[in-house]
Image (cartoon, rainbow, N blue to C red; front, side, top):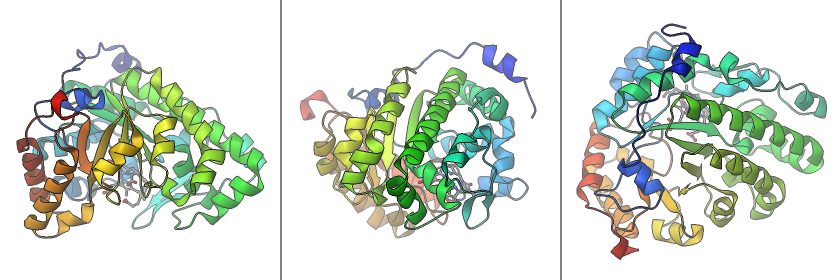
Length: 362
Ligand code: CP3
């Protein structure tokens, strides 16, 4: 760790809030001068300046070095002109703080040393303490907060998506162990989810105290659940999570992939804005989530093709929203590693040039 000891960083007064930023206004459903845009996984392998850093530092090393983490977080803000920064970390980052040993394996993803499958495994998890487990990350937030011209998004994985890694022991396509646990051992499942919700509220509370100005919950794998299982096995936990987040005083985005069949349930669990993937027309997604802002929803694959195809699809997404307040432009999932960063920068300009949102369009 370098720079300020955490206590000093935590004591440093935060820069003034900026509620007028178009990204934050949009999350509150207010009209703005231009549609705000940022990209999930904007800090990462699509940027050559990031790849240069990765030549001598792993993901885990970056998240344990406040200055490096701040640098990587700010790279896409400088290069692309996006309206928000997202803290550079992984959804597995807080797991060490509850006693889970894991590694990030190149080309594969997070691998858990001892999968969590029994009541005894769940009971052995520790209570999360942000200061002892993610101090450099909190310090990075304070650096970014004072250097970034745009709001900083903090984030966490949703309990189901985290459970998929913990129970499977690594990346999975069909989450067989996780679903089996959910149905065959409902009490173990409930306790595991309770623990993950408590960890996540504490982790996000520490991020907000350190200076993040909005929060995104990534439920990347929740599209694997039926609406019935979402209702019976997950909804109440998500509601507890969002009730906890609501007390933190910053707006939240609730994102998932493959969620067209459960959007209304997700929205009723919570979130100021609901993330949409590309499998649903944005106007249809908006109708399903009620009086909420939405975020999305260009297919990230389009950025690999010719600019004309990107432009046509981006204009369609914008037309679907038709200048209503409450649309944050984003991809439907993360930036793919082979994306040309010039396409991303051009897309930011296109979205900004599209014009303002207004109450009249509502
Ligand atoms: O490009 C890189 O080298 C980035 C470094 C890296 C991240 N995660 C950054 C990250 C690496 C090597 C990982 C490991 C990892 N973690 C993988 C392997 C494949 C991959 O994408 O590199 C996976 C699948 C995970 C699990 C994970 N992390 C999920 C499901 C999510 C939620 C977002 C999503 O893609 O569905 C994350 C979040 C994440 N990983 C972020 C970053 C910087 C934060 C979110 C963001 O930037 O938008």
